[in-house]
View (tube, rainbow, N blue to C red):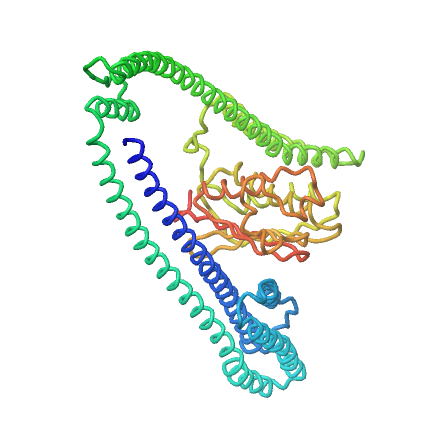
Length: 525
């Protein structure tokens, strides 16, 4: 009788499970189909939205270019149009790829074709307006541009975009609503099916439990406790029947499992502790090694960069002095004096670098800042730059004001910054060009400008030139061995003096670096 009841209850449970599975499968298929429709509509909506955004940017840039300044040179490199045509191509390709998945796809392809034709025609329209501007017919150009903007763009192009966005938004909304409806429907079916299955199973379980002895109930309770992880649970079954024998075997098995589990947990805790200790040791060691390697690389890079320019100037001064055997003794004395000054500056660099190598912090507040006349400093820098520029035959021009320009600063560090900029101007400029060093005074600022006729800097690279180890593409082509540290050091030196540095540059047209330093409010005596 027990087996019959067990079979009946099992059959009913299996029937409800199969029914519930079939219902959920049907709902899942419908949900998936509607979700694909929603995803397709949402993706198309995003592509149309991107096309609308790019077209707005393109039309805006073209209209501004044609109306803001009629004497501005025309720029034929229109990246906005490239992005616009790329967005149109992505929309067309995606629509062709999914063609046939929706009844309105043919109409959408026709709409995309109209959009493409309109955008192609817009290029011709803007070209015609440009021709009018070239002929000097600015009034006719503005009138034609205004008519095209209001009649064609606003009345033809914009309605097509709005209609597409609205249609795909409606598709997505409809698909989302259908998905929500199916999910809600499936939820209620699952609740009803599960409730019925639970009630029938509960009723069958009550009937079966009445036909079982108390021993099997205790055995089931003990089994559940063991399954939940309570290994100390035991089955207490009295009697001398098969259930008692089964309960005894069960208790012995639970006791062995409990002992093995305790031993395993103890070994696992010990292993985890040792692994954690070794892992932390390895992490600490790896961090130390990485830090030491970074410090070593940065130290060697600083040595290489900070010593290169003074050594080059010293060598140039000596070569100039020895080049002509008839050089007067005063010129020799002047060259030796400059070599001594550069050697002192070089010694200061070596002192700073050795202090850094010994992990001694640099004290920026040491008595190195003193009142300094920028006119004298720039005169000395100009002499050094002429030595650096002699090989490339670059004319170094110096323009100074009539009155002194006193600031509070470290002349060696400022000289180092100016030599780095001047060395770059000489290194990356063609032969027989000009480099101009100018000092101007304003109310509270001394402004130093260094203008060269070198390779220039690309617009997208200007924002990164003061980053450590950054080098422009043109600079890498001309000097592959550079480290990209110079401009970062210049920025750091000027910032330490409370100043600021700006740059204006155009690729192939040279660069102009502007250094602004605060003037002393009181002239030193």
